[in-house]
Every structure is written in C-alpha cells, then in structure tokens.
Length: 389
Image 1 (tube, helix red, strand yellow):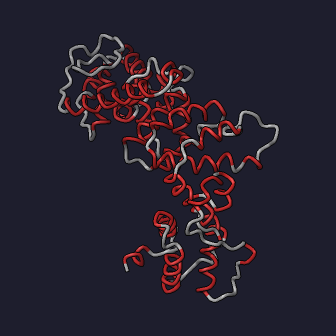
Image 2: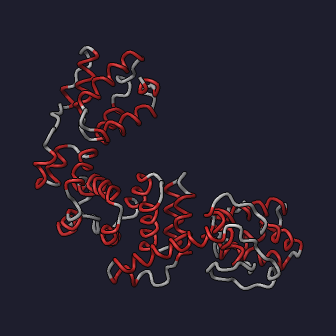
C-alpha cells in the first residue's frame, strides 16, 4: 500500500495505480484526511486526483462531494479550502495558488467561517511582515517567496506530526528550507499552546551544523523570552557541554567557536540565569556563565557525590541524600532517578516522607519542584493523589 503522505515524483505512478485498483470508497477516505490534515501535499495530491478523474469520470462526483466536508477547526478548514482552491472550486477571498483544471469550476464552497479564516490568515501574514521588518537582510532574502500559506503548511506539519518528532523533521526538511522551518517553529513558540519542549527539540535536532545554529541565533531577538531562555539551557547541555565527548576531527559543529558562544551569551540576563538553574548543575553554571556567579550561588544547595550515596541508611536520610545527589538540575535529578529506580520504589508512606523532604530541600525552586514531581507521577514513583493532601 502506498502512503499518499509520502507521494513524490518517484512513486507517483505506483500511487496512481494503487488508487485505480483500490476500492473507491477507501481512496476517497484517504483524500478526506489529506484535505483536512496535509495541506503541504496539496500540489501532488491535487495532481493525483485530476489524473484519476481523467481516467475514471466516476471519481468526479465523489471528489465534488468532498467539498461538503465538515471541519472541526479553523486550521482544518483552511487546509480544506487550500485543496478546494487547488482543484479550482470557487472560494472567495482566500489567497492561494490555483492549479488549473476543468473538472470543478461549477462548484461553490460555502464560507461558513469566512471572517475567522481570514483573520487567521491575516495573523500569519502580519507575523511574516514583522519577521521581514525586524530581522536582517539574510533572513529576508531567504523568505522572498514565503507567504501565509507556506507558513500555515509548516505549522500544520509540526502540529500533526507531534506523535513522531523524527518523522516531523523528515517531512519538514524534505519540503522546506531551514529558514522557513525555523520561522514556522518560531510562530508556534510565540503564538500557540503546544508543548515548548517539543518545539525546542525540533530546533535542537535541526541545528546540526554551524550554518543552522547561526540562523537560529538570528531569530533569537524576536523569540518568546521564557522559551528562548530554556532553549539556551538545552543548547549548552546538547552542544557546548558535550564538546569534550565529540570526535576531535569532526568539523562544522554548532556552537563550537568562542565567537558563537559569545553571541549566544548576549541573550543571557538575570531571568535567563533563573531558568538555567532549573536544568544545569552548579558546575555547569560556573563553566558557562561565571560572570553571573553572584546570582546562581544565592540559595545554592550543596550536593553530594554519587559514591557517598548510602543505600543502608534509614529511608529519611537516604531520601535526603538522593535529593542532594543531582540537585538542583532537572536533567541530573531525572537521570539519577532512572539509575536508582529500583531503590526509589516506595510504598505510600515512604512517598509521603520523600515528598516532605523533597519540598523542604527545594522550597525555593518552584519550577524545579513542579517539573520533577510531574515526572515522578508520570512514571509511577509518586501517587498523584498524595499531591492533594
């Protein structure tokens, strides 16, 4: 079976043959999903539909019936309109590229959400105009043909492929340039409620060379600050702190040069340091931003070494030592939780003791506490009902 979401010039004839030899109802259902959730495939899917209709006029009415789809959101509706316009259905006031054909000119799509749809597309257009206005010429020159429909297709991919970040990145990088992808992620960071860690991960897995990391730094000035601060922490952990583990012969590593690190540090202020404290160890902070020592050492917690962890201590002392083992870094704490997951299996009474000690030690680390406890609940170390008591 051909996956139409992977339709391209190489497998086009195979896909066309598949559609001709598959139950028409099943093919139409596949097209329905494409209409609502795959606007980035509009050109190839539209061409496929037109070719099918050339070979089998029975498809024409079924495709016309697709114009009566019920959409559950503005975004699925915009995707639907893009396909209808591509197939030459008459849709007023929606600015999309038309793929000319002779089949559907008599069809009129009812615009039940015209105002809302146009407001959404206008927001995308305004965002792109602001990008061009506030960023340097290099960004602008690489976005000459970038418009609100291009941006919409990118954010649709990012939203609809959240189940598989690797598939998401594969689709994005096949269809769009790094500049366009980074602008799409930026729009969602600044204007959506999508999990910021997912969006940060998309950036981290896309800045695999010095060229891409420089593009990322260029859009830093207009990125939502709390997400940018968090991204800086992960850039340090993923790239700068891990340089000592990289092959010395490897070239073009992101954030490898002192100049690039200095450029990154221009975006660090007191608020950034507070965010970095949630994810980096004291040692990492000392290496990365010694100039902010007076901030991150305030209220610092004296951690213990791994070899000093004594499993034979009573539970209270053991839990206290465990909390100090990786503090106050989220990544370190969760790493040790994974390493000592058997030792950290607790009955309800022990969970209460642990929570009391944990909250006492990290009383001034509100975000750190929330992130760690949420993870401990998720992985069944702590019962969620205990948090209500």
